[in-house]
Image (spheres, rainbow, N blue to C red):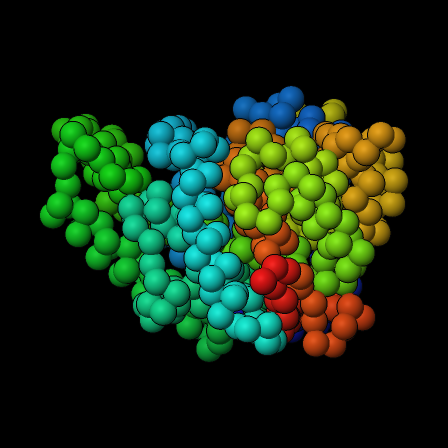
Amino acid sequence: IIIDLLLLVSLISYLCDNQLHYKKLYCWSKIYGPVMTVYMGPWRAVVLVGYDTVKEALVDQADDFTGRGPIPFLVRANRGYGLVISNGERWRQLRRFTLTTLRDFGMGRKGMEEWIQEVSSQLIDRIQSTNAKPFDPTFFLSCSVSNVICCMVFGERFSYDDDQFLQLLQITADTIKFGSSPWGQLYNIFPGLMEWLPGRHNKVFADIEKMRGFVLTKIQAHRETLDPSSPRDYIDCFLNRISQEKDNPTTEFHEDNLVSTVLNLFLAGTESTSSTIRYALSVLIKYPKIQEAMQQEIDTVLGQKRSPRMEDRKSLPFTDAVLHEIQRFMDIVPMGAPHYALSDISFRGYTIPKDTIILPLLHSVLKEENRWATPWSFNPQHFLDQNGNFKKNPAFLPFSAGKRACVGESLARMEIFLFMVSLLQTFTFSSPGGPDSIDLNPEYSSFANVPRRYLITATPRWE
């Protein structure tokens, strides 16, 4: 215990250092190479650095790198169940079922556009109600983005004034912040010791139990009104599958996996996309000429009133380039979601031992010097050719890659495009302190880069 306490003190000092952890890893790779071993407390981790290395592991050797690490915070939050932390047959069944079900309910398809357009219209009405006065967009954006995933999972949308819903959104934001704080990292390194200590982790876990209670209430309501021949949403489909496999003793379709997977979808489908859109508004306030150029392009293609559609993206190359660059520059999950060696892995002449955490350093891919002309500067030209047409870059991997890439990638891409185009079509965004008051460096940074919150002004562009 004394040794653990001494390590704890030294790690607090280390984690509170101004140098961000993932940036240190990137610097170390220049000395030790693109595949290196580091120790985080008792945990051995192999860090994969650069596009070629990450692609070779996650795509070319995908089967070897499908494992997900037993991260203590996630294990406790999910009680060991759900899609995010599962491995083996549980992961394969839950991922296949989740992808199929979400696609059936419109993820990445035209029907989903209409849902997002409707939610976007409600968001615009809410922003209009600020009457061009400064406001914090965080909860407006969280409510809107969350309502998209809620339509698919719960079969309903929630009011911006629903106190319980707002509490859940606050818990979601607090959970992500905790996971990216020094205390969140310490919990993952010394979970046994942290369980005995007071601190923010106790409140976070208590709040997660409130979310679990909310989900259980929704599942029970679905049970009482379920029509097996006409499933309304993800929960209904999962309940049908539970019924179909009730006599299978090894089934992965049971309530524990349902509750944790719904929590996974709610958290991931709310915070990452809403944070990206919030960060996008900060970027466009910081660079008003870019905002103006996007608006000119949107006006030319859509005019004042026609709602954007995904097919408009090819006619809005500059807008599309800016939105891609925002995601690259934001670098939302710099260390990627941790992978895990379920058995010994042979990779690039090394043996990665079983039970090793594997960190695909997405930061090194999104900021790699030989893949981006100006990796440390915001530059939409990264995604434009000499003729102003949109061009892809294979190193654009904010959603990771391979078999454990983000299950909601197509939905997130659709939301970012449709929400942002609708907002810029309707408003010009600014800050009371002017462009120079905006700091694009994250407020919290570790597992996720959490953007800073600002009061902003949305000035209607049309009478």
